[in-house]
Image 1: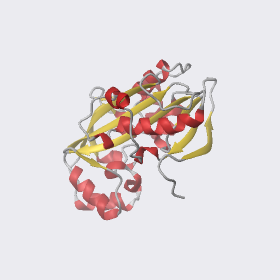
Image 2: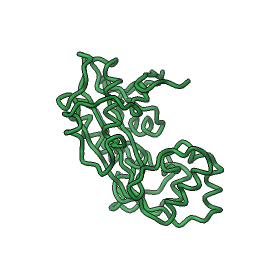
Image 3: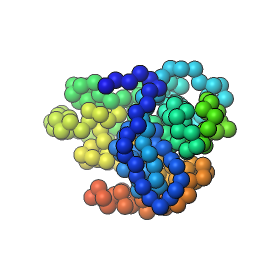
Image 4: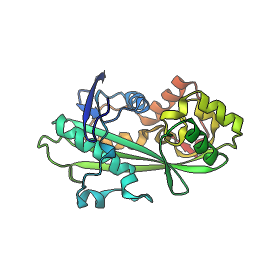
Length: 255
C-alpha cells in the first residue's frame, strides 16, 4: 500500500542485545538493518517515506548540513533528517538514526531504475567509469517535546566513496539485470550482492556504499549516548565473513 510522504510504518522486527538503550532505525533497507545489527545494539525499525517530502526545512538545519555538491532536494543528509524528523515525533524518549544513499555520476543522481531497460542504460553509463556514492546520516537525541528537530537536537554526517565499475559488455549487463537484483537499487547495482562482481575498486567506506557507514554511525550513536556498541572494524569484518566476501585492499577501501 502506498503511503503519503511523512507517513509511518512500524515493523515487528526488534533486534535485541544486552544494550538497554532505546534506539529506532528509520529505514526499511534490509542492508541497513543487517549492518546496524552487527554493531550489537538493540533497536526497533520504524519506516517512513518522508525523504520524498518537499516540506519547508528550517534555515538552521540547512546551514548545519555537511557540504555536498548536489541540489538540496537530493542532499542525502537532509533526506536522512526528514526521516528522523517524522519518526522522532512518535518515538518520544528514544534516539533515532536515519540514513539515505545516493549514487552520482557526472553530477547526476542515479535513482532506482524504472524498468529493466532503464537499469541496462544506467549500467552502461557506469561501465568502465568511477562514480561517487554519498550516504548521509542523521541521529537525533530523544525528542519528548514532539517539536521540529533543530541542530541542537541532532548530529549530521556525510560519507563519500568512489566506486570504479569494470568495463561491462552488453551481455554482462543483460545477464545481471535478468537476476532482478538491480531493480530496487540506486544506480542499478548492489555491491553487497551479485553486483559486487562488477566493482573493481572502492576508495573510501565500503559500508557507506552498502548504505550505512559503520565508523560514522558508531561515532554519531556514541555521541548520542548509545553504549555497548561493538568496534566498527570488527563488525565490518564479521559482515564480510557472513557474506563470503574477501576484504578489498585497505586502504583505499575502508570499513
